[in-house]
Amino acid sequence: MRAVVLGVAAFVASVAANAAEPYHLIPGAVPLDSGPDGNTIVFDAPRGLIVFDTGRHPEHSQAILDYAKARHRPIAAIVNSHWHLDHTTGNWDIRQAYPHVAVYASNALHGALETFLKDSRAQTDRMLADPKTPAATRDQLLRGKSMIDHPERIAPDHIVAKSGRMSIAGRLIDVHLAKFAATEGDVWLYDAKSRTVIAGDLVVGLVPFMDTACAEGWSHALDDIARLPFTTLIPGHGDPMTRADFLQWRTAYNNFVDCGHSAKPGKECVAGWSRDAAKFIDAAHEDYAAGAAGYYLQTRLRSSAEEQQRYCKPLSAATWRKPAA
Ligand SMILES: [Zn+2]
Image (tube, rainbow, N blue to C red; front, top):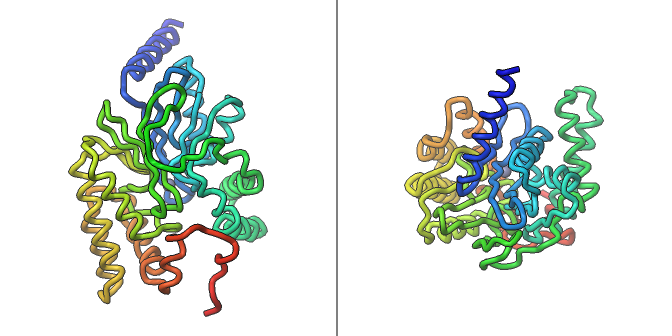
């Protein structure tokens, strides 16, 4: 009994300590055998907690809900960095627990639903029809598919249409919108008090996830971030970075894009990424990062001129289909 009581006291003490932090980080994982969860960052606001990104898997959402419960504070608002499902799927779990939660994001989900997500839904159906798809993967696919079929579960009800200071749950926050970067509209935050940038997937240590990227717009967004006097940056996946870390990562990103657009052998570009970003790639993810860099090199940086520009303009069903090869 005593051990139980002590355990509770220690837990309460740690939560009280968390309340004094400028923000609380719930790290997402990048497993090798399933989809990643984005990092979640929680801020205190006068009307409750603000949750930046909500992850993909149920376990990640549960960690967010458990934190709110331990803090005895409601989740008043969600801010999504972008529509990728590893950052938005948990919106639905939080909405069920807190039906009045306000959800802030860019309007990029709209175009994605009739293009990229429509294609990934079709691919999901093919994988679900394949008896070789393992049960755990099936659960993840079904969860993702239900968000595409019921986008109101994850969609914003407050659209971030431009950069500026916004009042969210009663707290003033510097909200930035990067257009045509990792997606059509990436939201990132700057907390001047703690000099922290919350970057979403504009920064991902292992490898820039370029599935829906406009390479040049992304580079401009990194320049915008660099202009602010931040000392800490929380990436969309991976550990917090110092300013020097970020500048090193930005150099690695720009080198990779430049190499991709040059006539150098692809192997050289991938090796360049692995070398320039080595600090951000742990041993377990070396092959993952190199494999992903090679994939993005082919599908984004060395695809046709038209394909390279696909995500540098609004997504729409009318222009989505690839021309016949
Ligand atoms: Zn992500």
